[in-house]
Length: 329
Image (cartoon, rainbow, N blue to C red; front, side):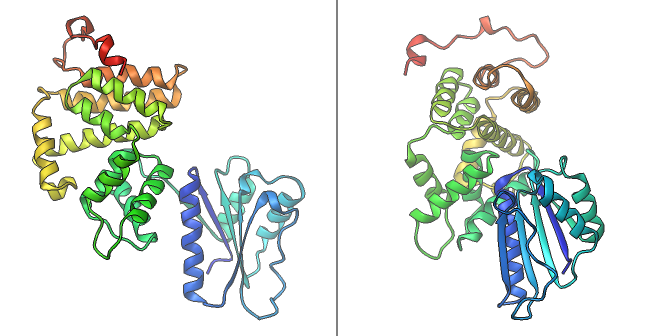
């Protein structure tokens, strides 16, 4: 095992999962291994790694939050990394290495650097694997349709994914695989307006219902990027089904496949591709626009849910506007 490891990433949950997996691997190789996990804010000095333990075993130390180390502790880590002990393993966990370039360079030179990355927004397989992994760590399995349902509800918010998987596992029993019915009963049963409801209204070409669902989701505390993730996921499903993907290939039950297939027929030539592009623009706007997220989302959702002729200027005045009664619910 390398004497030094550096886990670098920008997602707290994924970094925590990486640390948990590393600890599991250490214990799998050595049942008696003693692994110490500390936060950089809790210590003033680097734990002793060069002195053999009383029990003669290898020392394993993980330090989280290394991106924020300063002063003496930072100097100690840098000095240690120039000549790390071969009888110990030091794991450094950082949320970005911009402030610790020397530590990152030394860790790469004398050990291994692992970049813990989120799947890209468009990486269906990567996100499905992540959801499946959350079920597996709780000792459960879920079928493809259940995984797709979690993704539709939670979008690309890893914390929401973990929370919903945990809720579903806690509320279901038995040895069989968790189904889409289990997910819908638990997640929808929580009474929260979700990105899934917004995506359905968009797919049904109902701007008023989409706007109402959006406002409900935002009021319930849903993260804007999680709502975007649900919209992207539904868009990808519509594109896949329109292209002829089978239920298994699209990751959905036959009943869901028939419903999505029917919804896809409401989109005219080029509309699904246009929606896909509009979602890319929305992603950039949410991450870089000076406008409030709710305003950016409202404008995008209305455009996405409104039928249009691709290639012609969009005239919102030619589309029936949502009524006050509808928006007051």
